[in-house]
Length: 231
Image (tube, rainbow, N blue to C red; front, side, top):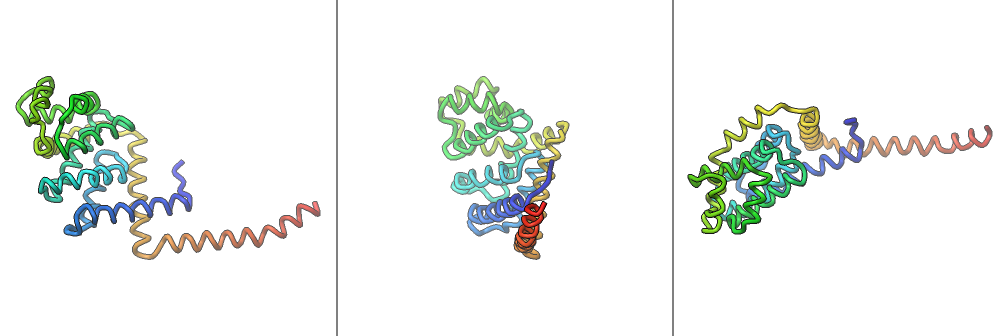
């Protein structure tokens, strides 16, 4: 079920705190971290993606995209587009991670090897189609462009930003599963627990409650052992 243990509460609040810290680093302290996290939550929910996976993809891209001089909005748009593109392409689990990592590397140096292009075409066909549209060719023609070094980081980012609304609409049109709904629920629980912790030190209150329960159980141990021995 979706029961949440004390350990999970601590884990989820810790994840959110860590993500906020990393978002601040990614923005070089020049943007509102709350705004960045709100946009990442929106992206994650629209794609039925775990918040930490979406945020990590954004942060992994940030160094390369900062080097390209992209604004925070453009960087978030790329994360939005890429996340939804892979959902539409049907890439899940290991395949999702492989394509995401390949695109992350390519955003730094462009598509340099056939192996990278083949990975994108095989598991992230929607991304390959966006690249083809950007270059005015078809998916088959991308191989020649890669050989010529024309699938640059700028081409990839422009292709993703240009296709963002299309990918988001396609993702929204896909039927959601119970598993998808549970991902959204977990995202919301994570955010809610973090906000509660920030506003009223919820985590520490929970810890004190757990410690109190432990004390009660310790106090009960002696009488229970006595009862068992007499029985």
